[in-house]
Length: 154
Image (cartoon, one colour):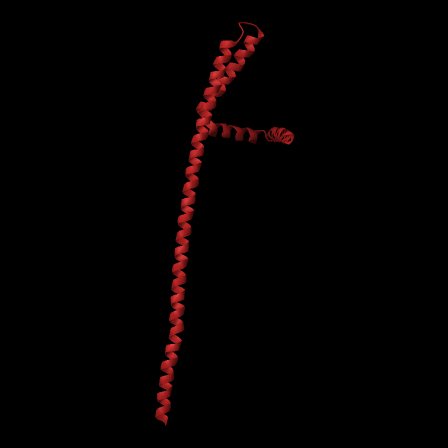
């Protein structure tokens, strides 16, 4: 009888051992699949983020090129307007002097835009606001008020 009991125990241990290993194997497989899925999701997220970043960079570059092109067009238009003012200015007197001053200012602005571009304009504006914060604040408020009035009438 002792022999049967020891045989049963061995059989139970064998069966119990197999039953205990299956959940461990299953848990290992689930854990491995979860790890693989997490890695795949991470890779996909990284790829998507990279694609979005690249697209945003490309769009910003295109926008920058278009803005610089528009700035160049504005500068050319200013220069053309200055030449037109000079050609059509009266021969003498105060109007001639005012026309010449306006034409000179337009040419100077045109030259500035062609040399500095939008980035130079932005830098100069930032420096002006740093040096003169209160006047810049008042100009901003006045500008906002004018925009509000113009849009509320429409």
